[in-house]
Length: 219
Image (tube, one colour):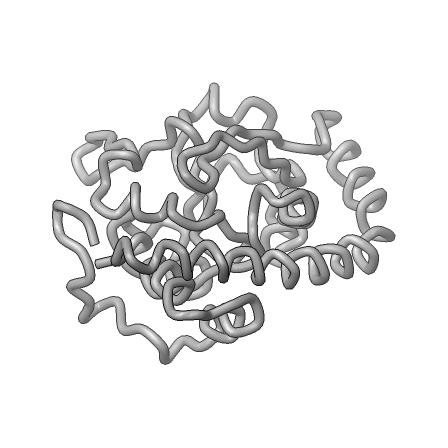
């Protein structure tokens, strides 16, 4: 489990990691700037809807943050289909949206969230407020009720992480939260920005299928 004695170290590492986030998000915004108007035009031409999708999500320590992405789904997708995670071959995704998702370009506006400090480059996925998961049989389970949810709030949410890289979009939240644990724990042992990026990209680091990192009472 995450030791309370490591809280100070974790806070110190987050501050160092913040420098890393500012530098890389600034470079990302600079080099991606020419793509933004092209993406906006493509989204508008397809269905005339808004270019950005804005949503309230869980930030560090349970603070509510507002995150923007280039819209990849039909207008008012949450109202029409419910607030559920994206999945493979999702019927809500538009044609332009499918291309943006395949190339990761829909995430570009989140560089602004990283730059202002609401998010980090590497960390657990920022979960939407009120988002739920549909179990087999149709039962909806709120993410807040899944073991491991509260522990994720100890660090800023990230643009990428182990769960994002290794698991399918429709993977069970319990498996996702298990893969978030190494990134959270790494801040308690001195890992900073570049080391966490290497950790996130090293698919050999953590065998989630053999993990028993948390139980119903948490990590």
